[in-house]
Length: 537
View 1: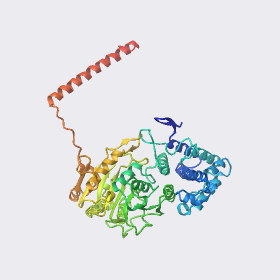
View 2: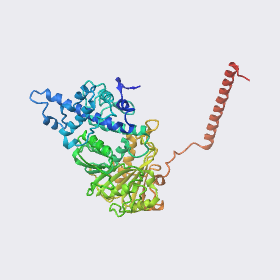
View 3: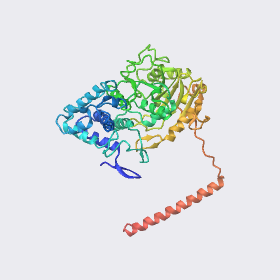
View 4: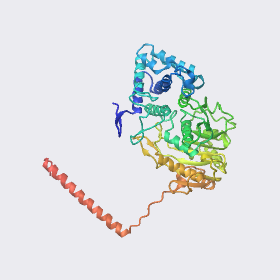
C-alpha cells in the first residue's frame, strides 16, 4: 500500500521514493533485482529529459517569431534536443504496442544521435528482449508517467515533492532529481540484494561532510572510484552555494564498472556538468596518469582482496608496496600520487585501515605519517550505509601543511607535524530502524573543528575532550602509529556534581522509598484483580 505524504497544506500524494519502489516492483519475476535500476533509471532519465524539453518547447511555441523545432533554441537554454521519437508522449502513446521495447531502444538511439557529445554511447539499448515483455514495459511507462520529473503540468507529483526528515516539503532544483533517484535506487536495491560490499553508494551526508571539509572552491577535482558521480555533484553544489562559478572546478574521474560508469555520466549529463570520466580499472589502467588534482574525493571499495596487486615497482607506491590481500593502502597511495603540490584529499575507508599491521600496512601508514601527509582523521558514526555495517572513517590527506589556501582562498596556518583527530561516533540520529544519518548541525560541528584548526574557519580552534584533539607525530609514534581517534581525544568532560554527598544520599533514599511504596501498591492491586477473577490464593 502506498502511503500519502502530508504537509501543512494537506495530503499531496505518495513520496518519490515510494513511487520509485512501486515502479521497480513491476519487474519482479522478470529480471534479477540487481538489474532493476539499470532498467528503470534510464527510463526516468528519458522522462526527465523529455519533460525539460517540453517546457522549453511550449515556451518557444508561444513566441510567434520562434520555431519550436529549431535545435538552437534548446542548445541556448542548456536543454537536450529531443527528437520526436524520443519524446515521452510518443512512448506513452505506443506503450500498449507489442514492439514497445524496440520503440524504447530507438528512442535511446535517437537521443544519443542528436546529442553525441554529451550522451554518446551512454544509454542502454536492450529493452527489446524476452525478459522484458511488452506488458511489463507498458506498466513501467504508465507508472513513471504518474509523476513529473521536469516540472510538467498535470502530473500528480512533481520534483518539489521531496521531503526532509520532519515531513515538510522542500524545494530542490529540478536537476537534482536524478541524483536523488539514483541514490535511492542504488541504496534500496543493494539492501534488498543483501550486499555487504562491492557496489554501494556513498550516503549524501557523508559526501557533504567530505566536500565541506575540503571546500573545493576552485581547481581540479578527481575521484578514482567515482561510482554514480555523487562527489562531483556535491562539489558543484558547494561552489554554487558559496557564490562561485560552476566552471571554477574541472572534474576528472574513473570507474571500473562499465554500467555504473554510464550511470555516472547520465547523472552528470542531466545537470549539464562537464566531466572527463573514463571507464577502466584504476590500478591497472590509470587513465589520468599525468593528472595532479587540487582536490581528490573518493569512497573506494572497502578492503577489496581481488584488486590484482601488489604491482611491485609501481611509481605510485612511494610509501611501500600495498599487499595483494587488501587494496586500502593502494587507494591511499594512488590518491597521494595524483595530488597537486598544495592539494588536499578526502577518502572514506573502513576503520581497519587506521590500525592494521598486516602484510606491511603498518609500515606504509608509518611512512605516510612520517612524511606528514595525514592531515585529519574523522571517526564516523556507525550504520551510515544502506549496504554495509562496516564502521568507517574519513582520511584527510594534504601534500603541504605549511601553507596553502583554504575556504574561499583564505591562507592556512602551518600545521606541520600535527594531525587532527575527530571522534564523531556519537553524532547523528536513526533515520530508520537500520540507517543512521547526520544532521546539518552534526556536519557543521565536524567541519568547524577542522577549519578552525587549519586557520580558515570562523573561530579559534581548541581541543574538546571526547571530540577532537590536535596530536603531534611524536604522540602518534608513542601510540604505535595507530590513527584511531579514540586513542587521542580522551573522554568527554563530565558535568561537575556540586550536590553535597549527605544531601544526595537523603534525596536518593527518599526516592527509593517512594518507588518501593509504589511497587507494593501495584502488587496489592494485581493480587486483588486476580482474586476477582477467581485466581486468588
